[in-house]
Structures are given as structure tokens and as C-alpha cells.
Length: 396
Ligand code: NI
Image (tube, rainbow, N blue to C red; front, side, top):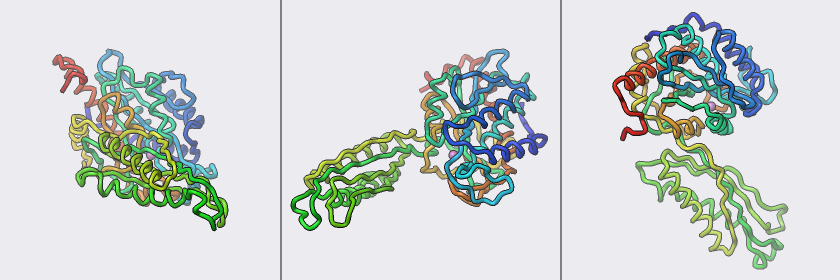
């Protein structure tokens, strides 16, 4: 079973994408989006799986004869950005915009569901669709996992549109694709005084300045040239007036890493620098971590399969450059095997830009690619089972 053509539903997918684009909803508030997805699926006779969450939709196609289960995930939320594309179907909601293309993901994967529904009898298992809320807060994947969305799932697949890849190309690679995205807040406690009498106080701004400078040595001096990391301080608050030495300085920022060892080592180093420098200036400081998603680390087995599937369908496979952005799909890959790909959408701007846009010709490509991948994956898993293949957890 292969060769899914999405030509017949292209116009429908474009209409769905534009409707979603006009009505963006922020993380955890995707009520209208959820209702619309349910309606589209129900109209197509696709069964909805109730999950008890406020937003998001789970649906299934196939599965009448048991067999393996694969999940295909699309994120559905938008961002607090004022749209500046000037498109005729631009956001109708002030200050909110699908500036990361999750409207594209949702409509494309709806297309996948429609294509697979048409040939449901041929499927060698179940395809479960996860229309996931709150990706931008990195919370939705965890909510779905806690609701049991991955129960029985043998492999999970997902994508992000990629503005810098041409339409018709799919970025596929095993190993790390997107970064672990942690946040940190550092609070430096000093002692206030008159600015003219600094010796009576302990200036937290001087301490913070030294810490921030020293943090830049982590990537250059503590991370191997063969690994990578980003340490960015993005905000700094201290003081109330020009003639007062403040009591406290607070700064925060983000840490991006592609493997768990580097992640932990950088976190440890950051804490050492904060505490050591603070102590050198006789101040106190502490670090609060805002735990983000881990890195998206793809299974080579599914990268290989997806490459075969994509090339058989006539798409160009490219080796993508990993992105230092975070993606909560990583949580699914902690639970089961799977693959996250970049789908070329030839956009004029990067993600989260107010003029973000994409080429809708990529919609049927994404829909048919994931239909083919899900069906090929089920066949592969069914073959493994019939050959008495061991479950993945036992493969070393
Ligand atoms: Ni996104």
C-alpha cells in the first residue's frame, strides 16, 4: 500500500488551513480549534477517542484486526504576536497569530487522516492522530501522555514546517534534531546603600555583571568543539534610582543543548559560576531552573524508513541542520520510538516572526507523506511481529 495522492483534497486542506489561520488560539485555549478539528474528523467518519482534556483531539483510523499502532502528531496552538503578513486570510484576532505554522501542521495531518480513512481496510494496524494543544508552552505533549495517548503506540511521528527548505523537500535525520530548551533565573542578593557610599553596601549589579560575563566562558571553555550549546542571558532587572545601590539583581535566560550529558554538565557549570562569583563579591545568589523539553532525538530505524517512504513518493530527502529551538515532541520520544522531520515550506521568514508565512503547495505533500509513512510503518511493524520480532525495548 503506497502512493497516496492528496491532489483531490488539496483545496479542502487549503481552506481548512486558512480558516485556522484566521482564528488563532493560544496554548491551553484552543477551544474553537478543537471543536473544528472534531467536526472535520466526524464529517469524514473518523472515530474520536475521548481523552478528558480541555483542548486537543485524539482520533483513530484502522485497527479492526488489532495489529500495531503508530501515532501521528500535529500541534494546534498559536502565538501572542500581532500578524503583519497582509494576507487576505490574516488573523482576525488582534495580538494572536499562527506564526509558527501550527495551522499548517493541523490541516496537513487532518489531510493524512482523510487519506488513510479512504483506504482504512488496507491498513495493517491502527493510526492514532494526536492533535496536541499547548506546544508553545511545552506542556501539551505531557498532558496527552498523562491522558494515555501513547498507550499501545509502537512509534510516533511528527513534523515542523521549515521555512528555509524548498517545497518538496523533507529534512530527515537520525539522532538529535532539536535542542533541549531550559530556562534559568538567577537572583543576586546584595545590600543596599547610598550610591555615594558603596563600601556600606554590597552591589548586586557588579556581581551580576561579572556572572553574566563569566557565563560566556561555558560554551567556549567547557563544551567540546564536537558538541554544541547556547547560553543566552536575555533579561536583567536591578535598581530603582541613579543614586541608590540596589538590594538585588535578577537576570534570566535560556540554555540550549542537544545531548543530555552536555545539558547536565552545562547546568552544573552555570551553578558553579553563579555561586562562585557571587561569593567572591561577598553576595549571595541562587539559580532557579525552568525545566524545558529534552532534545528531540530521532531513532535511526525510523529515519531510514521515512527516507525510503519519502523517496518512493518522489520527494527529495535532505539532511537537515539541527535547530536550537525546543519542541515538546521530545517527550513522546522519551516514551516510545519515533521520528520528527522538517518539512520544506519555503517561507519568507523564520518561525515566530510577525510576517511568517509558508507555501501552501507543501500541504498535500505533508498529508501524503505522513499517510505513506504511517502505512509503511504499520506494515514494517506487522512484519516484525509476524517474524517473531522482539519488542523494541529488548533490542540492544
Ligand atoms: Ni512550532
